[in-house]
Image (cartoon, rainbow, N blue to C red; front, top):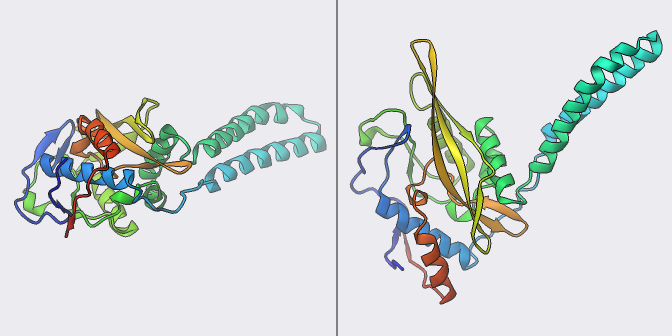
Length: 272
């Protein structure tokens, strides 16, 4: 393993832009791999204290409440006016709404890798960054500066960079990332593709979509992205909260870390 210090504030040479699917990213692959390995070692050695994410039940319960209210209202009108077709028309709609709310309530937690990834994606897409931040692994909530991706190349010195040491900074990163540029918009889409890589570590695939409006026509550019998730007690957490972590493009380093940890891997010292 690499025992060199992990630089959480890389103020040195600014990495040049590189094209990754529909995104332009600014990152150093060597530093990204080094930092990812250090983070995984920290987690494996128990440095992962965090509060439970719990469930976000407000919206699903509200949806089920609306469904029940609609059904009750239709039943009342049917009894008062003796019009049965009102109930016949409204019952299927209420059932669909109630079922959708019940399904959302069952998946809103992070009890499995797929549920955690799906919830994270939903939170990002609806700009619920506080909830998304709770699903982030504790080892990723640090002062490391991440460059927000863009839809076009820019001067690397002008690219905005954010840490994940607070909800506010995490939210600022994702607001900048979701609006990639004029006429461009970023949307995440989760999938059920899950592969277990070890005890409490999973690989999940999602798609990063960039929607562009060109000459009044809508273009959709999608790119598959591999993400790591870690088990935290009864829940799961997102290993890295960036749009695209270059270290996750190739996960060959994960088995080496898991193997080395069995032999009591030494920690890499931090610098800041």
